[in-house]
Length: 477
Image (cartoon, rainbow, N blue to C red):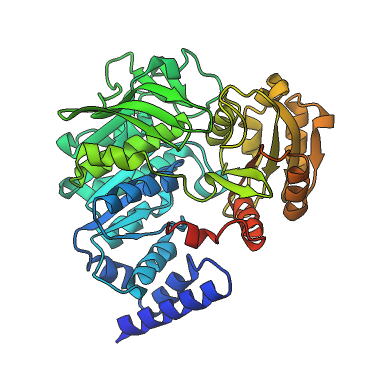
């Protein structure tokens, strides 16, 4: 009886929330769990196959989106927290939305899970697999040291035991270490193309030490951050050979990326996807590795990637008033650096921005909030390589800074050497968007780099103006 009451109440809240124009991504689950705390576990137990958890600092939402595309193309029916609400309440809301839909029960629950929630999610969902993307410093006010995050996820992967698979990033030593002692149930993915990397890396402050002996790891190449090809000089630990790997990588600015996908024992295939950036090549490899573990043929999985698109707010392009608005979520130094590198590449930012090789100036809207979901400690902005905006000044037009911490962002740009005449502070997001659109010529692309809550607010503004559906509707397409 309590289960039925919880389901009824949760569905009612979900329906009301959507009617009021809200996403209903967490509140329905919170209400239902108040009535029946065991509801998530019971709903997960009714799945035909089981659950797959995707976690890590960066790339969770996009990896889940890519894997969702592959699995749906292969005929699986999914429960998926598409909105990115990745705490227990959000996971429960995803099940409630599925329960409210007609049709047969779902085959698999595909769940993006916050790193700190992984141990609890494993207990509730008893997943058949876990995918770990990477570990970077993120929201220090929530997690503290990076070791804490790694430990939390490690507890989850250990709890899966021998009953499930674990997909791990071979190029991240912190992630790869989770696979020690797991044997064949650990599947590693990574990049095999030195042209994408550098011999030295000074931007990252992540751990680069062997987790066994504590000695500093030797790197032959850095791809970005602390991701690369590494080995302990004492012989205690080295980068595992990837089972799923990308070679001959071609990055086309924000137009997309292509690479040769090689899978141990299954051959190789060329993949061209419209989702840009080296970091999204990693996300694609993670999704492919998980799909293969779930029985999807390599050729079918690769074909699905070629039609995949970015999740809302993650390199999402929205036509607005004859211009393209590109939303690229940022939340930590490594992610922001990769976004800037992609957006300032030689290829245009999106269709309509010009021909490949177009080096005309691009206007930026940088929106920084410091709410809980963004991380209240914004000191991470000082670790972002904003100096690149000054170094490539000919590529950068006007920079509008907005959000609750607009003035802090403007100060950071000043110290990065960006000319003050190029920066305009407009704290209100609606007004900032108007200004940014006004200085962006028709047929060109406005580059928007917001933190999480700023992204949601900007996307809501765009939606209310009629240029895009609400995010919960966009994610269903």
